Length: 399
Image (cartoon, rainbow, N blue to C red; front, side):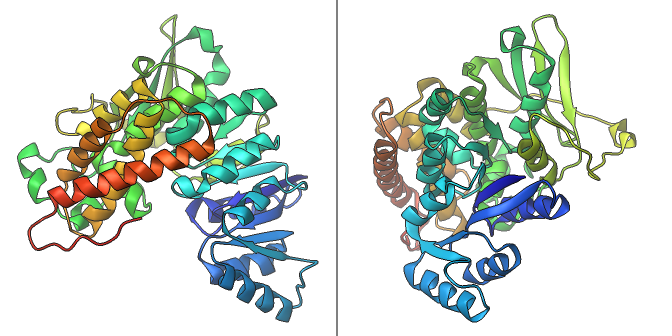
């Protein structure tokens, strides 16, 4: 019986993980949950799964949840409710936990993920930001502990599966596929008039707003390049992006002899979650892919001029350290401003580029240092956002 902690239990990956657990009750048990701000769903999950610990972001909400659970017959001895960053760390490092699913969006999940690795837990990573801003620290600690970092993102999960067909010293390059987003065939001349509604209309996946915008700019694929470099210990020039609109092939690995292995499966996050949870085993599932869907597959190189965010990510991947922190922080600030219609679509890469240029290069020494650099980069990005703000558009505070 594998005992699981879920960081981000009320989000999409968290709910999918619980769905997998429900399908295999003899294999998995929910031990702890970090639920963020969604107190209502946290209550439902606590009643259903009876975890040892549940964490919420807010202290008042945590106290209210503890009281509500007591009324439902679940006292503190059955389900303890904690809060804040310390509460999330408690969830991630609980002694009864074997496997941690890291699915909190943004850098807010970084400390707990790092502490889980330090505590010798096996971690399944669905949080891009952790690897983008602190991948060097996380992977070094995982090596020290002798525990794997198992990717849950579909692309890196696919690479991980393909790598079972050969050794790392036999790998020529890793290929990450990209759908191309909603503007694959939109002329660059029309980018200035792109609306929020258009950018949120992803052709393949239904995701959160930030990741959907990142897919439209190809920044999401840039983040995945950095993730691949960190996870598989390869330089950026050995990670290639190829546009594949059907999203049938999730990733490919090319070996030195010219062989290429591709991973194909349904576009359902439960499959990479199941793979990570059961690794190194494979167990039967009902998540089937129809071979008839392979009738038509298109591939093309990405247009780096149309989508400069991808090039900026490669630049950050090569520099490492503070530059990847600036890349992520500036993108988050710029995307939030675009969603608020304060800036245009084309301003996103401009703000990222300017923030990166204004951030001195530097290596990472600690998670605390990473978070301090992240704060500085966000302040810089907000200044850049003010410069690019549309006339008459009020700049609201963006965390």
